[in-house]
Amino acid sequence: MAPTPRPDRSGLSLVRRLRSLRFEVHDESLVPALRPGDRILADPRWAPGLARGALVVLQDPEEPTRRLVKRVAALPGETVAWDRDRFRVVAAADAAGPKEGGAAGQIARLRSEIFVVGDRREVSRDSRAFGPVPLRSILGIVWYRTGPAGRRGFLRPPVDQSRTPSVVSE
Image 1 (cartoon, rainbow, N blue to C red):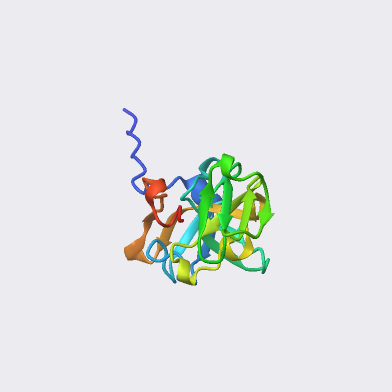
Image 2 (image 1 turned 60 degrees about the vertical axis):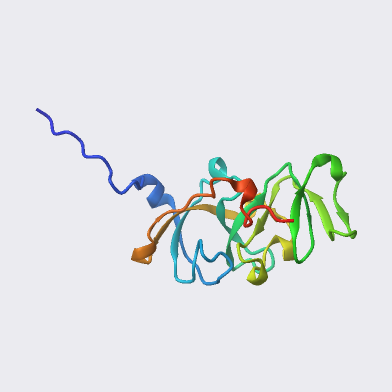
């Protein structure tokens, strides 16, 4: 009788783990989700998992050698209005296209870009400062925290993304 295969108790796909990029968090813009010193895995095959609320590692648009970890707040096809202090996803009927000025500051219809934010708006440098980020800047979608040991585990977007302050803000 052949031995019964043992289930993978770690829940980690070996292939996904091997292809994932490894990063360490250095700032506090995503506390409590991610803290300085957290070590994370980001899957470079991110397209299927890109959703509002997902955590992504991306190339800093202002400093290309630097990497940022931010939460996706708006996706291609959506329209976003923002200024330095706030942002909101705008209904398509409320915005005709890219503009500058006005009460909201700037408005843009995202084509091949995303809008990213930190959970702690007061300390985060994100799309409110540098604008929408091209999809080609995404290095990976964060899916697992490898350490420290007491914080190890899967990272998933909030269940009700529409009501999470870290995802949509007015």
